[in-house]
Length: 180
Ligand SMILES: [Fe+2]
Image 1 (cartoon, helix red, strand yellow):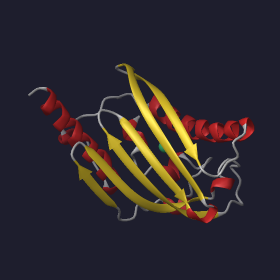
Image 2: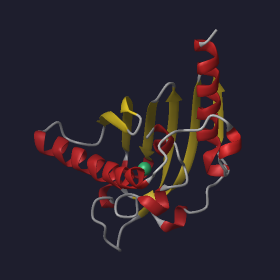
Image 3: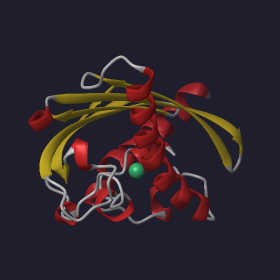
């Protein structure tokens, strides 16, 4: 699941019914910064306006959003999303608990500066997050092989995978540290 949340290439394919747009299919250059056992990525890309992301309609407004991803091992992902056009910031924490070899429990907290502090607004925001999560979950459940190989010879990587490749290096380093 961490591998999926850090994948910069899947938005315009998997999330078209929520925030993704086809104009985002080309992954632009992006900065990645490794610091100790953590990696941070900053990335700007085309997306649906936040207000239009739940409609699954053709007449959505397209905007640029700026994302910051931080991976901390063994499997925590933090995402900071800035919708500058809408003056909205989403800060989302994904904490993963392995249940067994093929099942993960996800604890997600979602902080937003653009919604009223009401039960109804929280419910709407949660509904959006769950809709995005359901798109990821459907793909992950179709994947037969759930493990993340740390030996880089077993997978093919693209530009979109620089951060998940770094995640693999970090996990390799963590395993080495743990066995010292
Ligand atoms: Fe996703």
